Image 1 (tube, one colour):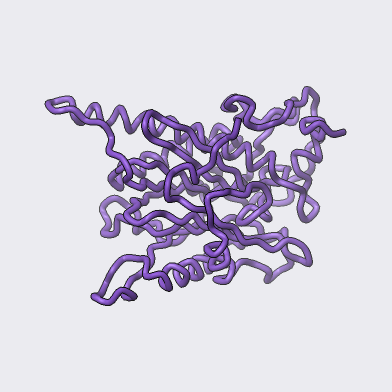
Image 2 (spheres, helix red, strand yellow):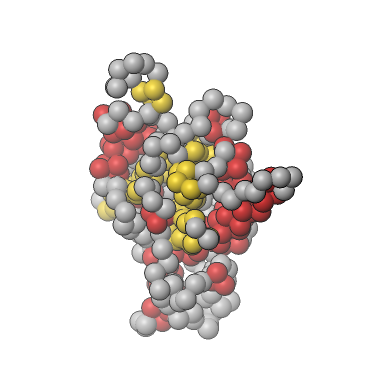
Length: 335
């Protein structure tokens, strides 16, 4: 069974651009949102690299976002969002500030991972990466060592981009994760990912090994997992933030430890507004809506955890960092 992907939420598109080889192992990923999408964010850990996150606080003015930009390159990589803004402005997408169609300011929050050791110094994403990722955006989500996950490392293994989705009643909840954590995502005693229990109908497509693996040495303690969770429901900014908070729980299930002082774990949430949460007349209206939101939040945690496992399993070794498939090839029917 397919694991699904974040683009199962209608209107959401994903694009990647990366460079690997010749001193490069980094990239950018963009999640394009349909018009009218509400955005929110939850940031944890002690070393964040973010852009436009304060704007997403529930008390602040702008509610709708046009895209989320995820990038390698540490703080340098925040420049990739400039290219996303340019791409959107050319299509007259953004917060309207004037009467003319082109008088808009695209709203593009972003976050970066620390992957600098995987590239030669000075090789990091710029605005061209963000623009190219937008050009490549579509409904199919490539996973593994692509986009912002090109240089990702999770603990002792190569990390990457993963995606998953789940249907909750009439709604779809999807997630995209760039797994680049200080903590490990797998038990080296058994070869089983910590979030393997969330697997749905054999979606990971592997036979879990039953032997210990030799853990390679960790190259750096500076990391950060970033991602996006999306739903096709109409949510307020505050409700949307609850979705991001719940997705961080999924990260904590997949990576141990999570949210350290050396991670800047950041999850964005998108609510496209295609459907309304159920409500009933009378004194129980709020309770009914809250219960429906709670179901979406529970699904957000599950899909983000599954997306993290997909990012781990789909990754390929880069810049001397071994992938899961290198340590346990028998899981994929090799070795």
